[in-house]
Amino acid sequence: MPSKELTRLLGLREYQVVCIDEETEKGLTLFIEPVHPGPICPVCGQGCLFVHSTEDRTVRHLDAFHRRCFLRFEVRYIRCPRCGLQAEANDLVASRKRSTKAFRRYVGSLCKLLPNSQVAEHVGLAEDTVRSIDKEYLAQTYPPIDFRRLRRLAVDEIAYRKGHNYLTVVLDYDTGEVVWTGEGRGEATLSTFFELIGPDICKQIVAVSLDMAAGYIKAVNRHCPKAREVFDRFHVVKHLNDAVNDTRKLTLAKASEEQRSVVKGKRFILLRRFGSLEDHQVNELAELLELNNDLSTVYLLKEQFDEFWVRGNAGSAAKFLDAWIREATESGISPLVKVAKMLQRHRRGLLAYHVHRMTNGPLEGLNTKINVLRRSRYGFRDLEYFGLKIRQLSIERSPRQVRRAKRAIA
Ligand SMILES: [Zn+2]
Image (tube, rainbow, N blue to C red):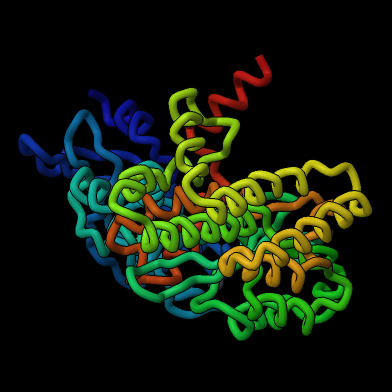
């Protein structure tokens, strides 16, 4: 094949293929040389006539014809009158890198789809190298965030390692993009974020969706004078389910052998929403609730609470909430009283749902994807990288989301 054609097929612009330098079954090394005879200073763009010295380099390029492809060329060093000794400008490969820019973009785009270990195996590089190429790719592909557009946030914590290592994740509620991740959780961690964006931007934050953890609330109150906390629906449901489960355990502890067989293994039925139960499950549930008054009370109040979210306005929701809290408190059942107290403490943030209609739903969805990421072993070893990957996940839509969007248009 004429070298001109080969040059074009390899996507080279400033270089042309001179000859095949080395050819084995697995690999191909091509000798290339610059198209322009005169080197150019990378700093000021001035052409230079005098070449100071040269250096022989071989770099990895995109595979060609199912073979690993390497490019060998001479780097020319110039002495620019203005900028001093420089390696000539080179669009093909960044200085001191061992692979071309095109190859590195390819590796980065693979990392979007596959765990790094698989990418490493596929391209024949160490996992460490793949990670550093991906970091570089992420920094180039997703430019720094413009915090000035932030108005509404969602904040949550995620466990990034077994045990108690947490990351705080802050999401721009209006774009769905993760704008910050920080190690730790609670007031100090979230305050770091607010200090980073500065008081002017803090002042324009109108709402923050969060769980009922005291630390985050304190940070929001301290830094964002105009923000209203919105307590996340998913977390409220979780607390209600915990109350049902705790009551189930208390029932189990007091039950006779015969009753025990009715209660055992029914956790799922109790925690599932009533509307999504199968017919035979409804029967089992009835049997279960008949057994114990407390369990049946807690269960019914949990199911009733769904109504809070569908009330048309804050006034009507407030009436419902107060009645619910009163009933739960009067029941005297300790797991339920505990939830009632907590909801009473967070009454304002709960009612804010009816103003802003925000939930941590977008973050919960992201959490599932993060779990996949966490399984690849760099997830937790390099937190900066982990943060960049989380941001990528929040921006890039999964193939399934893309398919769904296409269907919606069609
Ligand atoms: Zn120069």
